[in-house]
Length: 235
Length: 193
Image 1 (cartoon, each protein chain N blue to C red):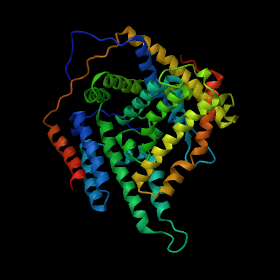
Image 2 (cartoon, one colour):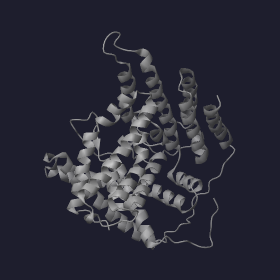
Image 3 (cartoon, one colour):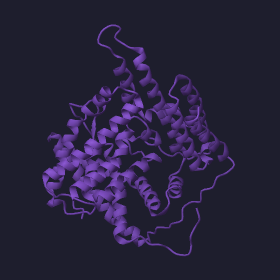
Image 4 (cartoon, rainbow over the protein chains, first blue to last red):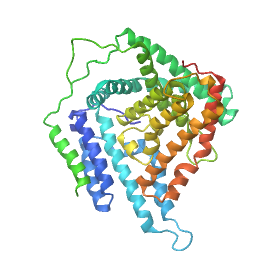
């Protein structure tokens, strides 16, 4: 599972906003230059990003294994022909390059996830989206981090109980109905208690979040991010 | 960001409850991403996620249901492991399956608007079954239209391959989820309002 890991790498010390600029610039450049040369250059950039974030590439790829069926299916389905020569390499090249591009974008995004604590992301959201909408999104995101493990455990217990009572013998729609009803009721109960608790603690539109500040280290990161973005538009 | 110390602007009671519900539904979407059912017609396992989109629109209404989905996507983008198989990061949203995910807020909003006949949260018990079905059918069309377009664009497939691998094999499973959602609303087992 991919999540924040405390550390002292270069990427850990960067401001979250400059890391977001790098990610978005990288994705834009990858979409604009899905050619063998473009992707070769971007592979080097991605390797640099992973090194700066001390992110192990193979374990990260394992965390994204669910996308690989899609990535492999595309070139195979496009290339296969009914009859000689059975496989059209040219038709498969485009989808294969596009699939490789996806892998690079996922790796760079994983470096952000591994090196950015949630409080900083929350502050970056409140900075990027002004007003109450931004505050709502920042609070919501923080609550998802808090409650995801809780609700996963709830759903796990519901499924255990369901199995123990031979619920798995029922039809699939019935199973979905039973499990999601129980899960949604648990979630709504928790929401009721949470809102009471938040009001009791003066839940406000203007809380104090960690101050974000750019340091000297951010200058090269921002430069790389903007350069990648420009490369997508100009080159 | 500046720190204000002068006055505290409290969140209203009803809004606080809605924020809590939206955040919890967003987390529930994340938990549903881990629940999969083996399903004979589809090569990929079927998760409960689209059912979560339906329920958000039905029980939170268009505005807060849509908002819950935005929170879900944003949390995933900044690193909560809420996407299929515990994945996270902006890369997933920009990747081949990003179209499905990005359409969730619109889909939840549409489910809410059609089922409740407007932006306000009405009583679901009064909504007819055809109306609920129409709401969910529109949402499924929106989700798959967005999903297939991004799949097509992202992996440079032909349209036919994208439609087959990205939509046709999953449609029967969506019908099951619609049946389940109707069952949930009819059974009146979820007490939201």
